[in-house]
Image (cartoon, rainbow, N blue to C red; front, side, top):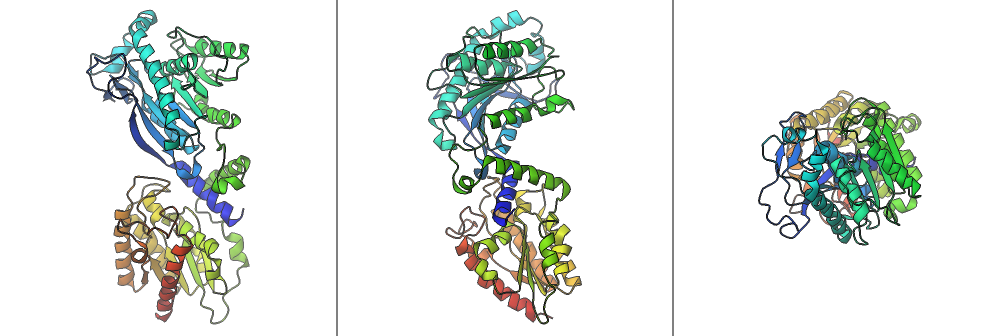
Length: 528
């Protein structure tokens, strides 16, 4: 794989790890129709017999937007309706956790809080469980709210379609997924839509169908992904199998996954049985429907195929299992690199995508110079430390330029404290010094935000880690290379015009960095 494709693949994998809860959207202006007299407030509860977080007493329906990182957006969106017998919402395993998984696939997710029956105690799970023995009575109690909840689902589709551009969503790719009672809402939207609020696909998961009065299959019925377990303790397995049979009987598109074990409500919970991977099967189904690739790819995506992306993702996932530090990235190049010539003052650039991208963006800067680029996109300081010997020391340089830390702050390989970042950088510097390699420690470049993980507010941490790096460099006689001061704007982000995403320099950015690093190299070479 060439460097450009590798950089894209690495960034794609990193982007897929992170998601962002964008905002909460009120579905109605003012009180929702039909519940104008409801005066209670939404509540949450985690201390219950299931030890699960649930939402209850929803009177004002909302959508919470979870949007994928910009580099992997497919344009597909899924509205996710958690279940809970129309009394509660299993907001995590049937809502937020699903949204995060979808985001990793480039799919925008919108978790729906639809209207619920009013609870009279602070133990909503205990209260509703007492009612589960008589479904007929429960259906009667829920009847009015079921109609409202379906209206909320249809309103959610209508809202998202009319605001598709705002969320980078394709208005022809809006699906609806729901669990249990949320599955009722899902199929309620399928049986009751108009031209403005038709779901383009639907995924009822262990759906409860008896609460739906209207079950006529529309002429343009959307494709269904249906999932349940045969041992559903509430007896709802046949609701899913019957739904599949009538859909196929009407010559509509449907796929059914009926697991032997899993019970009712498995959602995203890990039970160490095959239902743990049902969401992967949903991903396979989305793939078959063509929903995991943009309808009109732009930028780099316009020059590659979905099959290439899948192959690259698979290879990257496998590499992280077998070569976490990516020791093989430069293994062949290192073998082919001859020893420095007499009086050659070789300089190795160790870093992340900023370093790797430098060679690709301005190869002329490296041409004809004893400069060796050993940057790897997405890497953090512990990964660099692991490969420091083979990618720096063994190349026998006179000088090493270390530029690292921003991906640690972003959490690319997990949480890191500033001291941990400094410890890894200082360990690389100490190794270099032990092998008589002169050390240049670079400041972390300015970044107001990370596009792959918005909302972290990294600027303050970048300033703090740069202070630590500078103090360590001065204390140990190393050269400190200050890119930050030359490239920072008034927000302590990357100056406009020096990068295209606020983190990675463009050619203009590298042109700022080049004389600075040349000066630092000259200073390092003068040190004894």
